[in-house]
Image: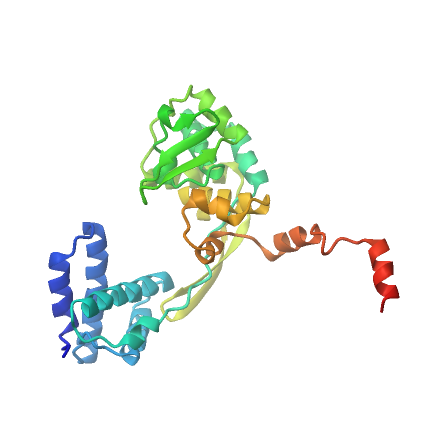
Length: 310
């Protein structure tokens, strides 16, 4: 019969044999440390057969530590991952916990419209290095590649009128047609793009560049931090990062009418559910698109025939 053991004892045992990357193991250990501190604060030992009530109390504990909702959710998912491993290794686990989910928080991530992308592309009142960073950003805005991929493009990746690269994160080969602006940028550098900065430096610089260009309109920032809901207005440029390029590309492709499954072959999303969480489209943009659909188009002849039939 399966037995339950102290959770931190099992976790220590598992992490000593786990073949995951050091970074991922560190994230698992952080979740275990949070759970152990929760156990110490409540004076209750936590075993591998912890139930749904314990998880709910743990969520409240994490929130009381002023952690972001995304951080709370990530910690719970890592604990659930470890519980699945415990079950496979023969320890007693309450299966009800697997169905426990922390609700997703609506993100504040922004996207850039095609008009805004072109505005950045045409802006020239920048230093030579800022122009290079801006060019990398525009490539990301028109390919939907991750920064880890569009920052390491080399002549071998430019084949005829497409970009061919094996993604760094998932080791998946992808092919992206070259947008005319992307071709223009690549030709400007004779296919030898300048050295890319680190992601951290890139994110700092692209904010400064977008501030220069004028992306200062205030955007509502709302986030659950701990037990409080924080709301404030922040200039749009502060939200712009290397990942904004990828999100903007995917959203603009979708708005242009490209089928989701075709975009997903570039972005690497496995399900439409995860893909549509990624797409940024306002209600105003949605109604503009719907208004052009034939369902909403006015056809007086059809309307007359329909009214006669009533």
